[in-house]
Amino acid sequence: MNLLEIGPTLVIEKSFTQDEVVNALFAMQGDKVIELLDGNRMRVL
Image (cartoon, rainbow, N blue to C red; front, side, top):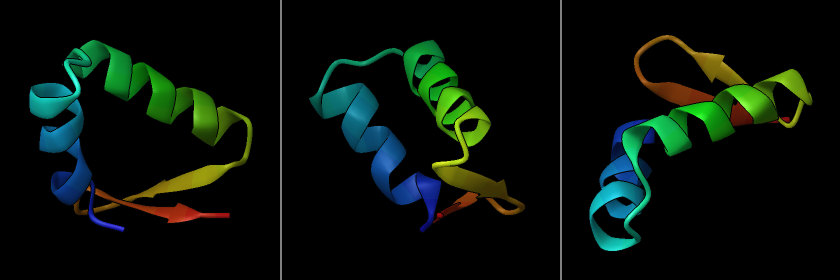
């Protein structure tokens, strides 16, 4: 999944801050829910 497709929606339309989005992504990666990949992509595990 390309993060550039969902990031702007979360920040602009849903009013999350960039820090909140990044922190949530790192937390999900730490919990082995997702894997962050090169090129602003992630994989759901």
